[in-house]
Image (tube, rainbow over all chains, first blue to last red; front, side, top):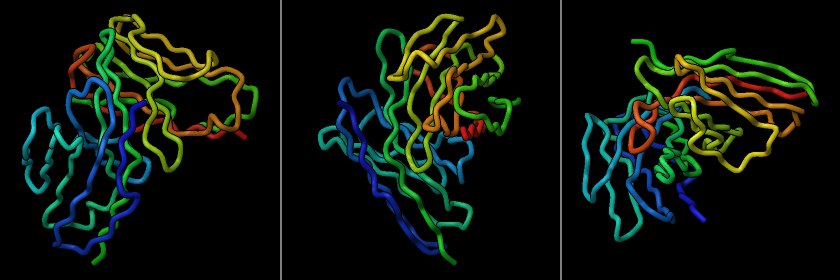
Length: 112
Length: 113
C-alpha cells in the first residue's frame, strides 16, 4: 500500500521557524508536493520536489531525500496567517492518471 | 484569471437522496479530478477526467459517478446517500492528464442527515 505519515499537530510562536516532516511508503515515486489548507477551505499548492535537495519559495522551503523516503516543509518568520493544516502528497501516475495521495495532515498553530 | 470554482458551497441532504456537485476548471485546463475529504483527514481521490474520458477511479462504490462536458466542466453525482458521505468534496484541475500540478477549488460541504 501507499502511505504518508506526518505529525498531527505542531505549535510555534510568531517569528519562529517550524519544520513539518513527512515520511512516505509508495510505489513508483515521482516527487513530493506540499499543500496548505485553511480551516476546510481549498488546499493551496505550496511546493514540489522532484529531485533530492532543498527548494526555496519565499518564507517556505521544502526538502526531499529519496534514499530516506523523507521530506519536510520549513516555514520561516512565522505569521499568524500561517496557522493552517499542511499536507504532503505524492502524485501517482499510472494509465495517464494524475492522482494525488495525501498524507495525514499536520495542524500548525501559530501563537502570538 | 478565475481559479477553480465549485457549486454549491454547502448542501444538506437526507439519507437515500441523490446529489450533484459541479466544478469549473481553470481556463485552459483540460483535466478535472474529484476528491473527498472527511473531517480530520487528507483528501481521497475519487475520479479523474481528461478530455471527457475517465482516466482514473479511486476506491469508491458505484454510487459515485462523474462526467466531464465539452467545456471541461464536470459533475460529480452520488446516489443513495449515506451518513458516511458527509464530507468536503474538492475539485482540482490541471492542464495535462498527468505529471502536472493540480489546483483545487474551495469545495462543496455536503452534510447527510
